[in-house]
Image 1 (cartoon, rainbow, N blue to C red):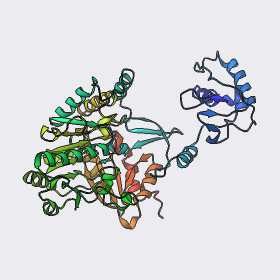
Image 2 (image 1 turned 120 degrees about the vertical axis):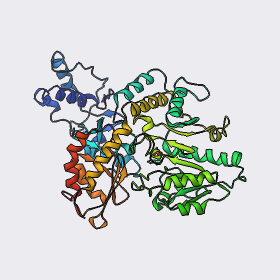
Image 3 (image 1 turned 30 degrees about the horizontal axis):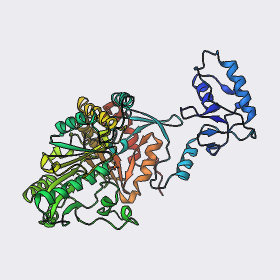
Image 4 (image 1 turned 30 degrees about the vertical axis):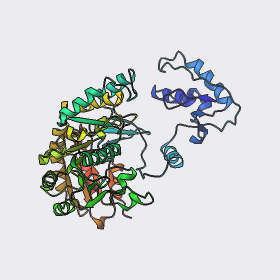
Length: 498
Ligand SMILES: Cc1ncc(COP(=O)(O)O)c(C=O)c1O
């Protein structure tokens, strides 16, 4: 039995890989281990790979023989012990299929991912375990606006991880204050309340405006209403899915939290008609990303903000996906020159390396909180706060919003110029782009699979929409370089019709 030693591979397998990397053919020099072990991942249990005694002995002979080989990286053999086993009970480096089967076997089936297993990422690129490179056109749903493993963000994380990662919220830490100050100054609010995931921040915003409704606006106890939109996506907690209009998100998860009213997204009359004395908030995505990159009619958000102001209703913008540069402005609300009463951020706030979210608002709203009202063990932790400081700096220093605006314009113009019966519509802002596939052309998924074959990773949102949202650090040359492939797929080349 050989125990793992920390680089994701174990024992002979790690040695094999190191030798291959050094340009040495281990099968020539280490016949007992060639070809690399054939058994599946099932022989790798609890981090242990089972190999035969014979293989162990050969491995040690090999270690002795190659220790002075300059082509081979210095390597400390892992702790090991011999267990008599059959010579066939050995495992090889896991394949794509192994990982897919493993995730399928051990994970709940709550996603239907493309069959690619990514093990490395940098900037706009990701690599699968076989070394194939892809352009990431999804950016973890806009959580990696700054690009994968941005060196400044990773360095901050590394340094902070070695210094202090988590303090109880019963104490202060030296990163949270600077993070909140930077965030508030950047987006222009009195205060911010840090959380971790997007859904938690949405829950926090809901709690904030409800409490504001009771304490400040004077709504009767338990009567507060929040208006939300059709096709919304604000996360997956039971309260949030309770006001989703997507049947699947709710099916089997009731009962749900009362106090929400749904109106048609983009319909200002519907909003006006839904507001009453108990309305404390209007929760809206400036563009509905998960809903299918739905851009509301021109002027809708401005008019909605005005209605809210007139009726003393908190305008709550969920900019978890649209914020922090994604749509070509720091906030998507900036396009309409509106300042939400309550702003929700997440995803790219953590620079793609750590979950950080926040709710930002002025004292009128944040002033409702007293110690003990709300909290989170990890919210505002020093590791996340340090990462978020650098994540924000990168967005500003690299003018990611400006880049998104410029490249988004170019990209959408090029997409609109494609002459294809399969493309029903191209919509979006900045580098949040949705290509609607015509119903007659079948689901967008087939187009995403064809894109993947051309080394472009994009994913459909709802049945008919392909979302293109590459990391904002992408450059014109890269986008131009892949455009012929995108164009070919959208014209139907290599798309399997079902
Ligand atoms: C607009 C919006 N709100 C909330 C969420 C939920 O964020 P999280 O998955 O981090 O909980 C998402 C996630 O896609 C989102 O797009």
